Image (cartoon, rainbow, N blue to C red; front, side):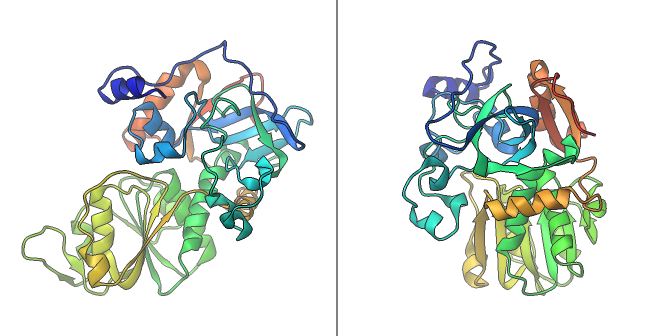
Length: 364
């Protein structure tokens, strides 16, 4: 994660990532409750792709200070000492580190712990990550998954992000929009449907899976999506119309300038735009936030009770998570896996996962 390597990668040179077989195994930190994990499967997240392609926000480098990282924070693993299968919550707060609780942790929000510059799985080689054969974690981060299939259990972390985002909206109205039917968008759609069985949910973006996840309808992306909802106002000098009878909430799982702009044009006065799991420097006209008194809510990590809830959901066969893990690669094939994850829908991919140790059997 040196600056020269980052700049070379950003300029199109080889990836920041390399496969190593001589890296030291992560050591157990001092203190009780730490255990060694052996990953079954570990997902490739959009943030992992951003690191590999040097697309991460430079502002966020203040929170991820380790010069060496072993990626992988979406992990289902076996506890080496007991054989128990667990899903990992990669968020480390004051509790695991033995610190006096910061204000956020005292308020029951460890997912926004104010000491985020300390190590976390997938962001510091000291603790390891799911793209390795071993990592260490605190017992309080582990959620037993029992006999839940590996391809469902590995979705626990992204599903918790999706549910956490859904819970940011205190329902006021009956119409919701989800932009971006990738892993988070699809899991968010399923979470919204389980929380609000009568909610009208429109998913905007390419793909054919949204209906199975609970969407009421799907629409192609772009400014024309606004007109599908009803009467519009047309600005004189800009392309995207404004929906007169706007929707109540927009969950943007892409957070590009185009999708943020689309979300703002879809919302009713006093509606909410929820930006999920993405970050970046973007040029956006925020005039509608002021004019329509909108709320913009950012969200990424979830809290432990939320992950516990989604692990329970994943254990329920009626929760529509089957088939979301579309590709599984062994660690030696990481470059192909990363290319597939980067291509996303163009490669027919939703969630791409790595299998670091083939000797650990997958649960079907």
